[in-house]
Length: 174
Image (tube, rainbow, N blue to C red; front, side, top):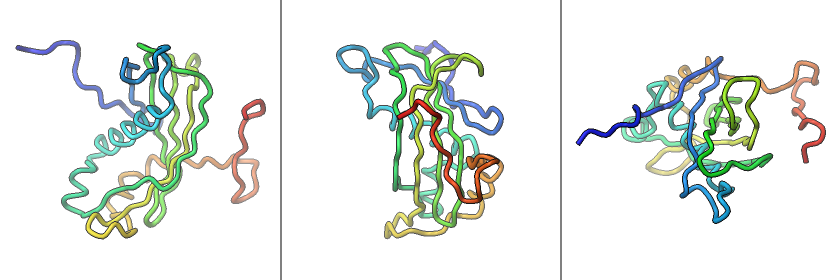
């Protein structure tokens, strides 16, 4: 029996941002058809995994061959609008920091297509640490991984902000 319905979609890069399209399923929602808040972290994980796969840096291979994995150290999320059952959303993944053993991402979940008409549903800032899978101690990121991610590094500091300043949220967002 041959399955139909399209090929697997691992997303694509657009202007240095990895974009992963997803659909909201029953398993993602509460009884009212609203996407459950914790599912956004699952969507973000999928976005990061597919980005690494597209860069030929499969996490399962890194674990086996390099004895390394990433663990989530910090997560910050702003929920701005709900996703609903059957919505088509996109997880936009940007690398915002490459440290010796750390990696930071900004990941947005958007509803809509095209650049001008997408609605920002949630915005996440995530910090991950590279660890040795045998000891779970922090370790330096392999140079090949740093080199693969470097072209996708975004600077989130606004041009007018002093060096080291944090970007503030747009007015009206709490």
